[in-house]
Image (cartoon, rainbow, N blue to C red):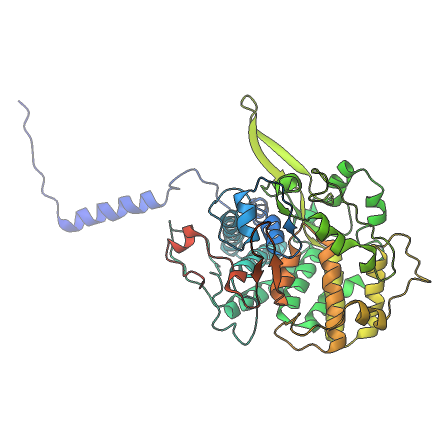
Amino acid sequence: MKNIKYIKLSAAFLLFVTLNSCDEFLSEIPDNRTQIDTPEKISELLVNAYPGASYLDLAETMSDNVDDGQLGSIGIKNEQSYNWEMHNETNIDSEAFYWDACYRAIAHANQALASIEELGSPATLNPQKGEALLARAYAHFMLVTFWSNRYNPATAQTDLGIPYVTEPETQLLKKYTRNTVKEVFDFIQKDIEEGLKYVTNDYKQPKFHFNKEAANAFASRFYLVKGDWDKVLEVSESLGSKPVGKLKDYATLSSLAPDIQFIEYGKSSYAANLLIASPNSLIGRSAGSNNFYLSDDKQTELFRVQTNPFNKTWLYDFYTYNSSRTLFTPKFEEYFKYTNLTANIGEVYAGIVLLSNDEFYLNRIEALVMKGRITEANTELEYFLGTRTTGYNPTTDKLTQAKVTTMYPVIADEFTPYYALTSIQTSYVKAIAEARRRDFVHEGLRWLDVKRFNIVVNHPTFGKPVNVLVKDDKRRAMQVPLSASNNGLEKNPR
Protein backbone atom coordinates (compact mmCIF):
# COMPACT_ATOMS: atom_id res chain seq x y z
CA MET A 1 0.00 0.00 0.00
CA LYS A 2 1.37 3.39 -0.99
CA ASN A 3 1.58 6.22 1.45
CA ILE A 4 -0.11 9.42 0.25
CA LYS A 5 1.31 12.67 1.52
CA TYR A 6 -0.75 15.84 1.55
CA ILE A 7 1.21 19.02 0.96
CA LYS A 8 -0.35 22.30 2.03
CA LEU A 9 0.49 25.22 -0.32
CA SER A 10 0.09 28.84 0.55
CA ALA A 11 -2.54 30.90 -1.33
CA ALA A 12 0.18 33.26 -2.54
CA PHE A 13 2.12 30.42 -4.11
CA LEU A 14 -1.00 29.11 -5.88
CA LEU A 15 -1.71 32.57 -7.25
CA PHE A 16 1.89 32.83 -8.51
CA VAL A 17 1.69 29.47 -10.27
CA THR A 18 -1.69 30.33 -11.81
CA LEU A 19 -0.55 33.72 -13.12
CA ASN A 20 2.73 32.31 -14.39
CA SER A 21 0.92 29.53 -16.29
CA CYS A 22 -1.56 32.05 -17.66
CA ASP A 23 1.25 34.25 -18.94
CA GLU A 24 2.87 31.29 -20.65
CA PHE A 25 -0.48 30.32 -22.23
CA LEU A 26 -1.20 33.83 -23.46
CA SER A 27 2.27 34.12 -24.93
CA GLU A 28 1.38 31.35 -27.38
CA ILE A 29 -0.64 31.96 -30.54
CA PRO A 30 -4.03 30.34 -29.72
CA ASP A 31 -4.51 28.89 -33.22
CA ASN A 32 -2.89 28.70 -36.61
CA ARG A 33 -4.29 31.95 -38.01
CA THR A 34 -1.95 34.00 -40.19
CA GLN A 35 -0.20 36.84 -38.45
CA ILE A 36 -0.39 40.04 -40.51
CA ASP A 37 3.13 41.16 -39.71
CA THR A 38 4.82 41.92 -43.04
CA PRO A 39 4.17 44.41 -45.87
CA GLU A 40 3.50 41.50 -48.22
CA LYS A 41 0.81 40.06 -45.97
CA ILE A 42 -0.84 43.46 -45.59
CA SER A 43 -0.94 43.84 -49.38
CA GLU A 44 -2.48 40.38 -49.71
CA LEU A 45 -5.06 41.29 -47.08
CA LEU A 46 -6.09 44.38 -49.06
CA VAL A 47 -7.05 42.25 -52.04
CA ASN A 48 -10.21 41.49 -50.03
CA ALA A 49 -10.86 45.11 -49.01
CA TYR A 50 -13.27 45.53 -51.94
CA PRO A 51 -16.89 44.27 -51.84
CA GLY A 52 -17.10 40.75 -53.23
CA ALA A 53 -20.70 41.33 -54.31
CA SER A 54 -22.41 43.57 -56.86
CA TYR A 55 -24.98 46.33 -56.35
CA LEU A 56 -25.48 46.94 -60.08
CA ASP A 57 -28.56 44.82 -60.69
CA LEU A 58 -30.57 45.90 -57.66
CA ALA A 59 -29.72 49.59 -58.14
CA GLU A 60 -30.56 49.52 -61.85
CA THR A 61 -33.89 47.81 -61.20
CA MET A 62 -34.92 50.49 -58.69
CA SER A 63 -34.23 53.25 -61.21
CA ASP A 64 -36.26 54.64 -64.11
CA ASN A 65 -34.06 52.77 -66.63
CA VAL A 66 -36.25 49.66 -66.48
CA ASP A 67 -39.76 48.63 -67.40
CA ASP A 68 -41.99 45.54 -67.43
CA GLY A 69 -40.70 43.22 -70.14
CA GLN A 70 -43.76 40.95 -69.77
CA LEU A 71 -41.64 37.82 -70.01
CA GLY A 72 -44.00 35.71 -67.94
CA SER A 73 -41.54 34.39 -65.38
CA ILE A 74 -40.51 36.85 -62.67
CA GLY A 75 -37.58 36.49 -60.29
CA ILE A 76 -38.47 37.42 -56.73
CA LYS A 77 -35.46 39.72 -56.13
CA ASN A 78 -35.99 41.45 -59.48
CA GLU A 79 -39.66 42.06 -58.65
CA GLN A 80 -38.94 43.27 -55.12
CA SER A 81 -36.29 45.74 -56.31
CA TYR A 82 -38.71 47.00 -58.97
CA ASN A 83 -41.28 47.66 -56.24
CA TRP A 84 -38.70 49.08 -53.78
CA GLU A 85 -39.37 46.25 -51.35
CA MET A 86 -36.91 44.56 -49.05
CA HIS A 87 -35.49 41.32 -50.46
CA ASN A 88 -36.69 38.16 -48.76
CA GLU A 89 -33.61 36.31 -49.93
CA THR A 90 -30.07 36.83 -48.65
CA ASN A 91 -28.27 34.96 -51.42
CA ILE A 92 -26.23 36.18 -54.40
CA ASP A 93 -27.14 39.66 -55.74
CA SER A 94 -29.50 40.37 -52.84
CA GLU A 95 -29.45 43.51 -50.71
CA ALA A 96 -28.19 41.60 -47.67
CA PHE A 97 -25.49 39.93 -49.78
CA TYR A 98 -24.09 43.33 -50.77
CA TRP A 99 -24.42 44.73 -47.22
CA ASP A 100 -22.42 41.81 -45.83
CA ALA A 101 -19.83 42.07 -48.61
CA CYS A 102 -19.25 45.76 -47.85
CA TYR A 103 -18.70 45.14 -44.16
CA ARG A 104 -16.38 42.21 -44.91
CA ALA A 105 -14.37 44.54 -47.13
CA ILE A 106 -14.31 47.13 -44.36
CA ALA A 107 -13.10 44.51 -41.87
CA HIS A 108 -10.16 43.67 -44.14
CA ALA A 109 -9.30 47.35 -44.58
CA ASN A 110 -9.46 47.92 -40.83
CA GLN A 111 -7.22 44.91 -40.11
CA ALA A 112 -4.69 46.21 -42.63
CA LEU A 113 -4.69 49.63 -40.95
CA ALA A 114 -4.32 48.06 -37.51
CA SER A 115 -1.44 45.88 -38.70
CA ILE A 116 0.30 48.90 -40.23
CA GLU A 117 0.00 50.69 -36.91
CA GLU A 118 1.36 47.67 -35.04
CA LEU A 119 4.41 47.71 -37.32
CA GLY A 120 5.05 51.32 -36.34
CA SER A 121 3.39 52.97 -39.37
CA PRO A 122 6.59 53.19 -41.44
CA ALA A 123 6.56 55.41 -44.53
CA THR A 124 7.22 52.31 -46.65
CA LEU A 125 3.68 51.17 -45.82
CA ASN A 126 2.04 54.45 -46.83
CA PRO A 127 0.78 53.00 -50.16
CA GLN A 128 -1.01 50.20 -48.31
CA LYS A 129 -2.35 52.70 -45.79
CA GLY A 130 -3.71 54.90 -48.58
CA GLU A 131 -5.41 51.97 -50.29
CA ALA A 132 -6.95 50.73 -47.03
CA LEU A 133 -8.35 54.17 -46.18
CA LEU A 134 -9.87 54.62 -49.63
CA ALA A 135 -11.31 51.10 -49.68
CA ARG A 136 -12.88 51.69 -46.26
CA ALA A 137 -14.32 55.02 -47.43
CA TYR A 138 -15.68 53.48 -50.64
CA ALA A 139 -17.54 50.62 -48.93
CA HIS A 140 -19.06 52.96 -46.34
CA PHE A 141 -20.06 55.41 -49.08
CA MET A 142 -21.91 52.71 -50.99
CA LEU A 143 -23.63 51.55 -47.81
CA VAL A 144 -24.85 55.03 -46.84
CA THR A 145 -25.91 55.63 -50.46
CA PHE A 146 -28.29 52.66 -50.43
CA TRP A 147 -29.43 52.37 -46.82
CA SER A 148 -29.85 56.03 -45.84
CA ASN A 149 -31.65 59.12 -47.04
CA ARG A 150 -29.86 61.20 -49.65
CA TYR A 151 -27.26 63.65 -48.35
CA ASN A 152 -28.81 66.96 -47.32
CA PRO A 153 -26.86 69.19 -44.93
CA ALA A 154 -30.13 70.55 -43.52
CA THR A 155 -31.13 67.09 -42.22
CA ALA A 156 -27.85 65.12 -42.22
CA GLN A 157 -27.28 65.70 -38.49
CA THR A 158 -30.41 63.72 -37.64
CA ASP A 159 -30.84 61.37 -40.62
CA LEU A 160 -29.94 57.75 -39.88
CA GLY A 161 -26.69 56.77 -41.52
CA ILE A 162 -24.95 53.41 -41.21
CA PRO A 163 -22.39 52.16 -38.67
CA TYR A 164 -18.99 53.56 -39.63
CA VAL A 165 -16.60 50.87 -38.47
CA THR A 166 -12.96 51.85 -37.92
CA GLU A 167 -11.60 48.94 -35.87
CA PRO A 168 -11.02 45.25 -36.67
CA GLU A 169 -13.65 42.75 -35.58
CA THR A 170 -12.55 41.29 -32.25
CA GLN A 171 -15.77 39.84 -30.87
CA LEU A 172 -18.62 37.69 -32.14
CA LEU A 173 -21.89 39.49 -32.91
CA LYS A 174 -20.73 42.89 -31.74
CA LYS A 175 -23.52 45.43 -31.28
CA TYR A 176 -23.36 48.46 -33.55
CA THR A 177 -25.28 51.70 -33.64
CA ARG A 178 -25.98 53.85 -36.66
CA ASN A 179 -24.02 57.05 -37.12
CA THR A 180 -25.87 60.01 -38.57
CA VAL A 181 -25.48 60.75 -42.26
CA LYS A 182 -23.36 63.78 -41.38
CA GLU A 183 -21.04 61.69 -39.22
CA VAL A 184 -20.69 59.08 -41.97
CA PHE A 185 -19.90 61.73 -44.59
CA ASP A 186 -17.38 63.38 -42.27
CA PHE A 187 -15.64 60.03 -41.70
CA ILE A 188 -15.65 59.28 -45.44
CA GLN A 189 -14.15 62.65 -46.28
CA LYS A 190 -11.44 62.23 -43.66
CA ASP A 191 -10.50 58.80 -45.02
CA ILE A 192 -10.53 60.04 -48.63
CA GLU A 193 -8.35 63.06 -47.93
CA GLU A 194 -5.82 61.08 -45.91
CA GLY A 195 -5.86 58.22 -48.39
CA LEU A 196 -5.19 60.55 -51.32
CA LYS A 197 -1.92 61.60 -49.66
CA TYR A 198 -0.51 58.07 -49.80
CA VAL A 199 -2.16 56.19 -52.66
CA THR A 200 0.10 55.01 -55.47
CA ASN A 201 0.04 53.40 -58.91
CA ASP A 202 2.75 50.92 -57.99
CA TYR A 203 0.82 47.66 -58.39
CA LYS A 204 1.29 44.68 -60.67
CA GLN A 205 -2.41 45.02 -61.55
CA PRO A 206 -3.22 48.68 -60.71
CA LYS A 207 -6.79 48.57 -62.06
CA PHE A 208 -7.77 46.12 -59.29
CA HIS A 209 -6.65 48.56 -56.58
CA PHE A 210 -7.32 52.14 -55.59
CA ASN A 211 -4.67 53.69 -57.80
CA LYS A 212 -4.32 57.50 -57.97
CA GLU A 213 -6.77 57.98 -60.84
CA ALA A 214 -9.40 55.69 -59.30
CA ALA A 215 -9.01 57.46 -55.95
CA ASN A 216 -9.60 60.85 -57.58
CA ALA A 217 -12.59 59.51 -59.51
CA PHE A 218 -14.16 58.18 -56.30
CA ALA A 219 -13.43 61.47 -54.57
CA SER A 220 -15.20 63.32 -57.39
CA ARG A 221 -18.30 61.12 -56.92
CA PHE A 222 -18.29 61.80 -53.19
CA TYR A 223 -17.80 65.57 -53.52
CA LEU A 224 -20.46 65.75 -56.25
CA VAL A 225 -23.02 64.21 -53.87
CA LYS A 226 -21.87 66.57 -51.13
CA GLY A 227 -22.06 69.61 -53.43
CA ASP A 228 -18.42 70.63 -53.06
CA TRP A 229 -17.82 71.74 -56.66
CA ASP A 230 -14.35 73.16 -56.01
CA LYS A 231 -13.17 69.80 -54.70
CA VAL A 232 -14.62 67.99 -57.73
CA LEU A 233 -12.66 70.29 -60.04
CA GLU A 234 -9.53 69.99 -57.91
CA VAL A 235 -9.41 66.18 -58.11
CA SER A 236 -10.30 66.19 -61.85
CA GLU A 237 -7.43 68.43 -62.99
CA SER A 238 -5.58 65.44 -64.46
CA LEU A 239 -8.37 64.90 -67.00
CA GLY A 240 -8.03 68.29 -68.64
CA SER A 241 -10.72 69.86 -70.81
CA LYS A 242 -10.54 67.13 -73.46
CA PRO A 243 -9.31 63.75 -72.17
CA VAL A 244 -8.34 62.37 -75.56
CA GLY A 245 -7.74 58.62 -75.36
CA LYS A 246 -9.02 58.45 -71.78
CA LEU A 247 -12.71 57.85 -72.47
CA LYS A 248 -14.29 54.63 -73.71
CA ASP A 249 -13.80 54.15 -77.44
CA TYR A 250 -17.36 53.35 -78.44
CA ALA A 251 -16.53 53.50 -82.14
CA THR A 252 -14.18 50.55 -81.67
CA LEU A 253 -16.49 48.72 -79.25
CA SER A 254 -19.37 49.08 -81.69
CA SER A 255 -17.35 47.41 -84.44
CA LEU A 256 -16.89 44.23 -82.39
CA ALA A 257 -19.12 41.18 -82.14
CA PRO A 258 -21.24 41.14 -78.96
CA ASP A 259 -19.39 38.18 -77.42
CA ILE A 260 -16.17 40.17 -77.76
CA GLN A 261 -17.78 43.36 -76.44
CA PHE A 262 -18.67 41.53 -73.22
CA ILE A 263 -14.97 40.92 -72.63
CA GLU A 264 -13.67 44.24 -73.92
CA TYR A 265 -15.96 46.54 -71.91
CA GLY A 266 -14.38 45.76 -68.55
CA LYS A 267 -10.79 45.12 -69.62
CA SER A 268 -8.03 46.48 -67.42
CA SER A 269 -6.07 47.56 -70.49
CA TYR A 270 -8.59 50.30 -71.30
CA ALA A 271 -7.46 53.71 -70.10
CA ALA A 272 -11.07 54.61 -69.34
CA ASN A 273 -11.43 51.83 -66.74
CA LEU A 274 -9.91 52.99 -63.46
CA LEU A 275 -11.12 50.42 -60.92
CA ILE A 276 -12.48 47.02 -61.91
CA ALA A 277 -13.69 44.07 -59.87
CA SER A 278 -14.85 40.48 -60.22
CA PRO A 279 -17.59 40.06 -57.61
CA ASN A 280 -19.65 36.96 -56.98
CA SER A 281 -22.63 37.93 -59.14
CA LEU A 282 -25.12 36.68 -61.70
CA ILE A 283 -25.48 40.05 -63.38
CA GLY A 284 -24.12 38.57 -66.59
CA ARG A 285 -27.36 36.58 -66.84
CA SER A 286 -29.75 39.44 -66.02
CA ALA A 287 -30.35 40.32 -69.66
CA GLY A 288 -31.89 36.92 -70.25
CA SER A 289 -33.64 36.38 -66.92
CA ASN A 290 -34.88 39.73 -65.54
CA ASN A 291 -38.46 40.61 -66.40
CA PHE A 292 -38.01 44.15 -65.13
CA TYR A 293 -35.19 45.33 -67.35
CA LEU A 294 -34.48 47.71 -70.24
CA SER A 295 -37.62 47.19 -72.32
CA ASP A 296 -37.95 47.96 -76.01
CA ASP A 297 -39.97 51.10 -75.23
CA LYS A 298 -37.47 52.26 -72.61
CA GLN A 299 -34.53 51.67 -74.96
CA THR A 300 -36.28 53.74 -77.64
CA GLU A 301 -36.98 56.50 -75.11
CA LEU A 302 -33.35 56.75 -74.04
CA PHE A 303 -31.45 56.06 -77.26
CA ARG A 304 -33.57 57.30 -80.17
CA VAL A 305 -31.96 59.76 -82.60
CA GLN A 306 -34.01 62.62 -81.14
CA THR A 307 -32.04 62.34 -77.87
CA ASN A 308 -28.80 63.07 -79.73
CA PRO A 309 -28.04 66.82 -79.93
CA PHE A 310 -26.39 66.34 -83.33
CA ASN A 311 -29.44 64.43 -84.62
CA LYS A 312 -27.33 61.36 -85.33
CA THR A 313 -27.46 57.80 -84.05
CA TRP A 314 -25.70 56.83 -80.86
CA LEU A 315 -22.78 54.38 -80.96
CA TYR A 316 -24.28 52.12 -78.27
CA ASP A 317 -25.19 48.63 -79.51
CA PHE A 318 -28.19 46.65 -78.24
CA TYR A 319 -29.12 42.99 -78.49
CA THR A 320 -31.87 40.73 -77.19
CA TYR A 321 -32.42 37.17 -75.98
CA ASN A 322 -36.23 37.32 -76.17
CA SER A 323 -37.47 38.92 -79.40
CA SER A 324 -36.83 42.47 -78.15
CA ARG A 325 -39.05 42.32 -75.09
CA THR A 326 -35.92 43.37 -73.19
CA LEU A 327 -32.63 44.59 -74.61
CA PHE A 328 -29.06 44.82 -73.41
CA THR A 329 -25.73 46.31 -74.36
CA PRO A 330 -22.81 43.89 -73.73
CA LYS A 331 -20.96 44.84 -70.55
CA PHE A 332 -20.52 41.91 -68.18
CA GLU A 333 -18.38 38.88 -68.93
CA GLU A 334 -19.14 35.94 -66.67
CA TYR A 335 -16.48 33.74 -65.10
CA PHE A 336 -17.42 30.36 -63.63
CA LYS A 337 -15.18 28.89 -60.95
CA TYR A 338 -15.72 25.19 -60.40
CA THR A 339 -15.73 24.06 -56.79
CA ASN A 340 -16.57 20.46 -57.71
CA LEU A 341 -15.88 19.30 -61.25
CA THR A 342 -17.56 15.94 -60.68
CA ALA A 343 -20.80 17.53 -59.55
CA ASN A 344 -20.41 20.32 -62.13
CA ILE A 345 -21.02 23.01 -59.53
CA GLY A 346 -19.17 26.19 -58.67
CA GLU A 347 -19.41 29.93 -58.13
CA VAL A 348 -20.25 32.65 -60.64
CA TYR A 349 -18.26 35.86 -60.97
CA ALA A 350 -18.65 38.83 -63.29
CA GLY A 351 -16.19 41.44 -64.50
CA ILE A 352 -17.52 44.92 -63.70
CA VAL A 353 -16.21 48.49 -63.77
CA LEU A 354 -16.54 50.31 -60.44
CA LEU A 355 -14.95 53.62 -61.47
CA SER A 356 -14.14 55.08 -64.87
CA ASN A 357 -12.92 58.22 -66.58
CA ASP A 358 -16.31 58.45 -68.29
CA GLU A 359 -18.09 59.06 -64.97
CA PHE A 360 -15.16 61.13 -63.73
CA TYR A 361 -15.39 63.48 -66.72
CA LEU A 362 -19.16 63.93 -66.38
CA ASN A 363 -18.69 64.77 -62.70
CA ARG A 364 -16.20 67.43 -63.73
CA ILE A 365 -18.59 68.93 -66.30
CA GLU A 366 -21.40 69.08 -63.74
CA ALA A 367 -19.11 70.89 -61.29
CA LEU A 368 -18.26 73.43 -64.00
CA VAL A 369 -21.98 74.05 -64.51
CA MET A 370 -22.55 74.53 -60.80
CA LYS A 371 -19.64 76.99 -60.64
CA GLY A 372 -21.29 79.02 -63.40
CA ARG A 373 -18.60 78.18 -65.95
CA ILE A 374 -21.19 77.34 -68.60
CA THR A 375 -19.05 77.97 -71.67
CA GLU A 376 -16.37 75.55 -70.48
CA ALA A 377 -18.99 72.99 -69.49
CA ASN A 378 -20.64 73.29 -72.90
CA THR A 379 -17.33 72.65 -74.69
CA GLU A 380 -16.56 69.60 -72.59
CA LEU A 381 -20.07 68.17 -72.83
CA GLU A 382 -19.95 68.56 -76.61
CA TYR A 383 -16.69 66.62 -76.68
CA PHE A 384 -18.10 63.86 -74.47
CA LEU A 385 -21.30 63.44 -76.50
CA GLY A 386 -19.29 63.48 -79.71
CA THR A 387 -17.33 60.42 -78.61
CA ARG A 388 -20.65 58.58 -78.36
CA THR A 389 -22.09 59.73 -81.70
CA THR A 390 -21.92 57.93 -85.04
CA GLY A 391 -20.16 60.06 -87.65
CA TYR A 392 -19.50 62.94 -85.27
CA ASN A 393 -17.86 65.91 -87.02
CA PRO A 394 -16.34 68.43 -84.58
CA THR A 395 -16.43 71.14 -87.24
CA THR A 396 -20.14 70.98 -88.01
CA ASP A 397 -21.68 69.15 -85.03
CA LYS A 398 -22.04 71.81 -82.38
CA LEU A 399 -23.67 71.93 -78.98
CA THR A 400 -25.12 75.32 -78.09
CA GLN A 401 -26.82 76.69 -75.01
CA ALA A 402 -29.97 77.19 -77.05
CA LYS A 403 -29.94 73.54 -78.08
CA VAL A 404 -29.41 72.36 -74.50
CA THR A 405 -32.23 74.51 -73.08
CA THR A 406 -34.57 73.36 -75.86
CA MET A 407 -33.78 69.65 -75.49
CA TYR A 408 -33.79 69.80 -71.69
CA PRO A 409 -36.38 72.41 -70.66
CA VAL A 410 -36.94 73.38 -67.06
CA ILE A 411 -39.88 71.47 -65.59
CA ALA A 412 -41.10 72.64 -62.20
CA ASP A 413 -40.09 70.33 -59.32
CA GLU A 414 -38.52 67.74 -61.64
CA PHE A 415 -34.91 67.98 -60.41
CA THR A 416 -34.85 69.04 -56.75
CA PRO A 417 -31.40 68.62 -55.18
CA TYR A 418 -30.86 70.18 -51.78
CA TYR A 419 -29.18 73.19 -53.42
CA ALA A 420 -30.68 75.82 -55.74
CA LEU A 421 -30.36 75.63 -59.53
CA THR A 422 -30.72 78.47 -62.00
CA SER A 423 -32.72 77.70 -65.14
CA ILE A 424 -29.57 77.37 -67.27
CA GLN A 425 -27.95 75.14 -64.65
CA THR A 426 -31.08 73.00 -64.54
CA SER A 427 -30.99 72.37 -68.30
CA TYR A 428 -27.31 71.48 -68.29
CA VAL A 429 -27.56 69.28 -65.20
CA LYS A 430 -30.44 67.42 -66.86
CA ALA A 431 -28.35 67.01 -70.03
CA ILE A 432 -25.43 65.62 -68.01
CA ALA A 433 -27.71 63.32 -66.01
CA GLU A 434 -29.17 61.93 -69.23
CA ALA A 435 -25.67 61.40 -70.65
CA ARG A 436 -24.72 59.52 -67.48
CA ARG A 437 -27.98 57.57 -67.66
CA ARG A 438 -27.25 56.34 -71.19
CA ASP A 439 -23.56 55.67 -70.65
CA PHE A 440 -24.07 53.54 -67.53
CA VAL A 441 -27.25 51.69 -68.43
CA HIS A 442 -27.33 48.32 -66.55
CA GLU A 443 -24.66 49.62 -64.11
CA GLY A 444 -26.84 51.20 -61.43
CA LEU A 445 -25.44 54.74 -61.45
CA ARG A 446 -28.81 56.12 -62.52
CA TRP A 447 -30.14 55.23 -59.05
CA LEU A 448 -27.56 57.54 -57.47
CA ASP A 449 -28.91 60.41 -59.58
CA VAL A 450 -32.52 59.45 -58.82
CA LYS A 451 -31.72 59.84 -55.12
CA ARG A 452 -29.48 62.88 -55.45
CA PHE A 453 -31.97 64.87 -57.53
CA ASN A 454 -35.05 63.40 -55.83
CA ILE A 455 -36.45 62.31 -59.20
CA VAL A 456 -39.93 60.75 -59.29
CA VAL A 457 -39.92 57.21 -60.72
CA ASN A 458 -42.91 55.44 -62.28
CA HIS A 459 -42.81 51.65 -62.47
CA PRO A 460 -45.65 50.15 -64.50
CA THR A 461 -46.51 46.47 -64.20
CA PHE A 462 -48.83 44.84 -66.71
CA GLY A 463 -52.31 44.41 -65.22
CA LYS A 464 -51.52 46.43 -62.09
CA PRO A 465 -51.59 50.12 -61.10
CA VAL A 466 -48.37 52.06 -61.72
CA ASN A 467 -46.11 52.03 -58.67
CA VAL A 468 -44.80 55.55 -58.07
CA LEU A 469 -41.73 56.48 -56.04
CA VAL A 470 -42.62 60.02 -55.04
CA LYS A 471 -40.20 62.67 -53.83
CA ASP A 472 -38.80 61.97 -50.36
CA ASP A 473 -40.40 58.52 -50.42
CA LYS A 474 -39.13 56.51 -47.45
CA ARG A 475 -38.46 53.57 -49.80
CA ARG A 476 -35.55 55.52 -51.32
CA ALA A 477 -33.54 54.25 -48.34
CA MET A 478 -33.44 50.44 -48.45
CA GLN A 479 -34.40 48.66 -45.26
CA VAL A 480 -31.43 47.33 -43.28
CA PRO A 481 -31.05 43.53 -43.52
CA LEU A 482 -32.76 41.37 -40.90
CA SER A 483 -29.40 40.04 -39.75
CA ALA A 484 -28.51 43.59 -38.71
CA SER A 485 -31.86 44.66 -37.24
CA ASN A 486 -32.17 41.37 -35.35
CA ASN A 487 -28.83 42.22 -33.76
CA GLY A 488 -30.20 45.54 -32.52
CA LEU A 489 -29.49 47.89 -35.42
CA GLU A 490 -32.22 50.51 -35.78
CA LYS A 491 -34.47 50.06 -38.82
CA ASN A 492 -35.30 52.71 -41.37
CA PRO A 493 -38.76 54.25 -40.88
CA ARG A 494 -41.51 52.99 -43.15
